[in-house]
Amino acid sequence: MDIVRSVGEALLNTLGSLAPFAPLLFLCIVAEKFWAKYPVSNRTIVINLVYVVCAMALAHGLVLPWLFKLNAFVPQDVWNLQIHAALTWRDVLLWMGYLVLYDFLYYWFHRLQHVVPWLWRYHFVHHSEENISAAAFARHHWLEEVWRYTFMTVPLLVIAGNPQVPFAVISVIVTFAILMHWNTPLGLGPLERIFITPRYHRIHHSIEERHINKNFGAFLQLWDWLFGTRYVPQRDEFPAPGVRGYSDRHFLQHILPVPILKKD
Image (cartoon, rainbow, N blue to C red; front, side, top):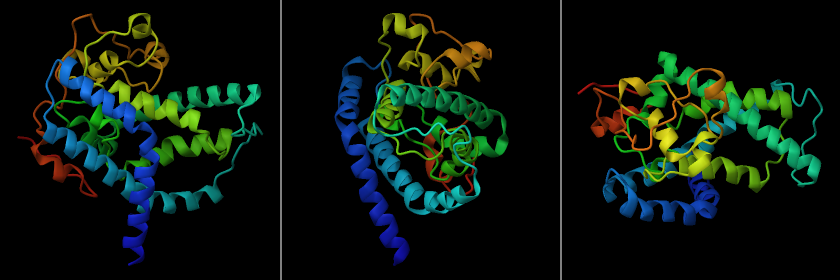
């Protein structure tokens, strides 16, 4: 019963944490009905939204509490940055640096997910979506937090400690996650060369050979540019997503504790 209660509380907490972003997500989903190059079925949208909520609840209710116990063994804030949630000018600059560091760690973690077979097995559930859209913004395996903790959370703890993350910083992370998966070929002008945009990230999900292992960043194209994985799409380049040879029909097998990747 304790497990059921924990999952129930995590489910309510997850819905509460996602609520502020519901208007943006709703607008993106509605806009996809008018501007999407590839139509997304209502069934796919519902399945992705239900899974996102359930996966996040499982991660926050069952996985993260155990991982957080490991924080006691991690040296924290070794540079004594002392980042506070109060957004003074000093804290604003430090939080901007925090986001850049987050982006850098995400970039390398994301690259490892594509080259380390065990990590790819879990990351696969995100790429198996055959028409990526805003509703799939957090469609990740519910156990992926284990690897994210190892490769991202621990370095963040060591460098910045475990500060109370202000809503403004969380908003940047979630907003980019939603918008980068937005199923629209609409361009964003000069921003297309700086930030991770829908067209830019679409390349990362492409089934085309020339797009494989490109565009790994979360916010900025900087790391892709520095480390040779940047691919700037042409104006009319908006490829179909997915993983060649696999189908999303086996979705339930992809989200098992040890995922089964079955070719069609």
